Image 1 (cartoon, rainbow, N blue to C red):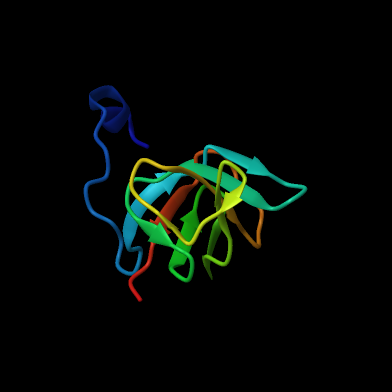
Image 2 (cartoon, rainbow, N blue to C red):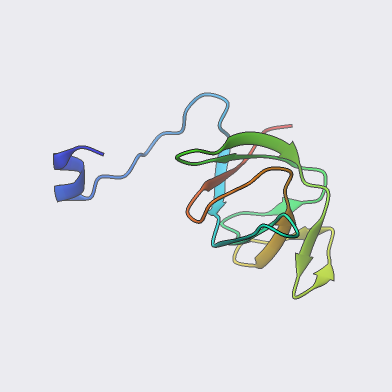
Length: 101
């Protein structure tokens, strides 16, 4: 991030081609079980494709398992706090995008 961006707080307004809609950021990653927790910024369902991007992270996968309060769910709305099983290591602050199907 450049000096002026830090000074004026400019945020990226456009997403890159093929990135999809940002639905949240990784709030926590549990390495032993391979689960990320996040607060959704848009709807998400089991079967949707997501992409996780960060400083050292960049992969996409299909959502196979999602939980709210340790209960399995098929989908969740914006604002819900969910846990999603992931296949690779993630880090706090990584961006999560919902890809077009």
